[in-house]
Image 1 (spheres, rainbow, N blue to C red):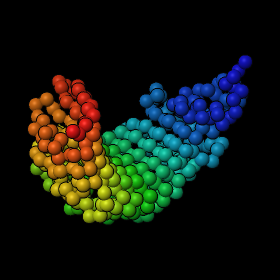
Image 2: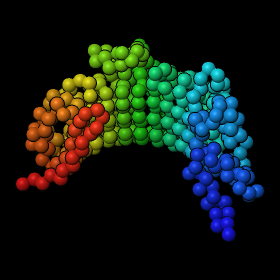
Image 3: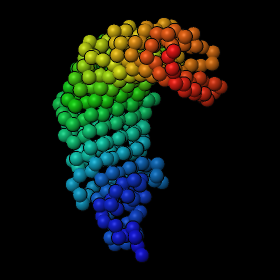
Image 4: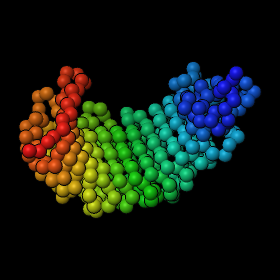
Length: 354
């Protein structure tokens, strides 16, 4: 008895959505009923690494994305290496198709690609809730923002390996996302001549930066040059409760309108650093704090309940007694110690005040 075949189409589509799209397509050989079922799956995972050639991947993606028997797609993950032998116009057409189908979650991971292949309609989708753009950090392509941006339902925006445009274009992007809650940058660079960036978003709750470097630092030899002049990023985000910065240049922030931070995560594995001046006025509200690197000094944390510390074997321990004394409400302490190579030893302790 074919128990799986007896299941309703809705449940079969759900099962197929957990498979890589290539595997889902291969299910079409099972029976006549399965022949076109994959076309109605609303979660697609397309990767050129699962195909023997770029040509076969291109033909496969065109087959899956156009045409479809249903009028919407919920989630698409597209991983593609667009080298010199790949026509990037296909990627533009695929993204346009996803937007037309009302995609809600779109994850684009490209290597050796140009950010200007992104169609304008991507920045004017009324259905997108999550948008993740990842380019090769080595090339760091310029993110070109169209004259008009309207992402009325976007809540998550994650950018990796892009060079940010000038502040006017960047502000246009942020203001075009009125519901934005989670903004993340990884391996991103500033516009070369921009002096400052301004983020104004009353809905923004989480801001994350990892490996933040100036755009002129294109050579790997100077990616960690601590003497580089970096523009200041200013926040007007009254709902911001989570702030994470991993990398150098921790001091280059300004908070004009933030009600109360709840969780802060700071890590600089290159420099010896002190607690950012811009956050000193917010320490009374911080409940969860994650710190890493060699820290010079820290303020009092009257509301801190959970503390995560990441140290190397040879440094960073000096402030531990001071931290314990200056955090009267601390009840959980987690210490991660870097040993040889990349091995970490983690110790978690429950604190009990006497």
